[in-house]
Length: 443
Figure 1: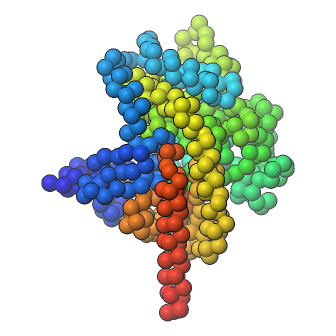
Figure 2: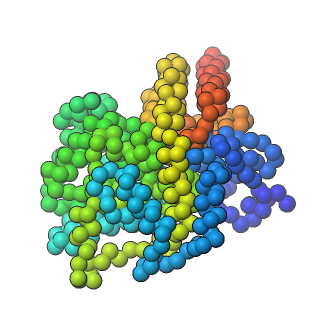
Figure 3: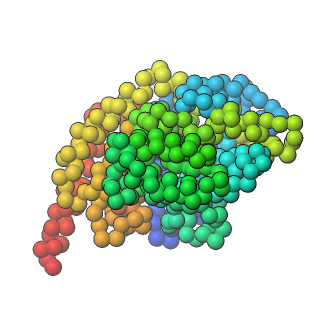
């Protein structure tokens, strides 16, 4: 019996309408940027396996670190215990995180890293004797699939079935959505007016503002400028609220710097990490906080304890993999590889913009994204599945977000592999536009 036949008997896949979706692709192995299928094909992983892979699949250095750790300690409860991999990883993270983020709370994925941040921010004010019940976020934001993370996310296909369960989070217009267009380099007052108005109206009641710095991911790969992020930090300071940076997607080089907050040279009060933290190997989340946040919980009163935890907090295997991941960033000069990918994408931008069906090309770090003009866009746009299948036929995995096509490869991708994918994007777009012209002529 094939893997797909066995899969169909018991499995339920994420974000999948099992009745109508194409059959899942059976993957039997992977190396570098290539996935190997059961029928012997090789597919280029153009989405870093859901934006998590950094140094390529089955990297020998990471494999060795995982194997060695498995031989000594695979797991131990982290409440009341500690171990070398967690300690070492926390030390390494503090070295590369924005300044002041000195306390690391481990969890097990991106949604829980955000959930931790929201609870941490809320209880911070409780412990200080203040009742602050309001959170602010940006439109088109996405922060995960747990209840708190969904509440902080914009209303969408992802959250609609659960809207009666969610708590209210007030949304400010994201900079790209304002009438002034994309945020200017100086970020004038118009750009941040929506957020500032909310902060003024809710003065004294806001616990925190949560944003995906520089790049809003699942909301459509929206890129905005560093000046807005810098202004956001200033506003949080002015109104005395915490700033949470959700860097689950943007952390570990995706936007060209180790963390996206570096583009604006700011430090948040709390920062969420996951995805590329373990190079795509294992589930691990982390929420970093400043000493100021930590000290609100550091008390003789046990009721001021942060009552949150997961069975696999700081799993030693995942920590060991994350350590190896960070070591490779230095050993292999990974940020320079991302800069090279970025230069290839920017070299392709003008050509891409000449296609009549292409709208709003976005490039940041190792991410290339653009919209395909269609009558009905959004996450459920049929064009996404059409393009997904066309690229699979060309042995490339590109998983569009509805009508937003994105290319986000592992950082080890070679120049000839980038060129090949860009050529195939050019080919698919040309064929698509030719079909549209022929269809128009026949009407």
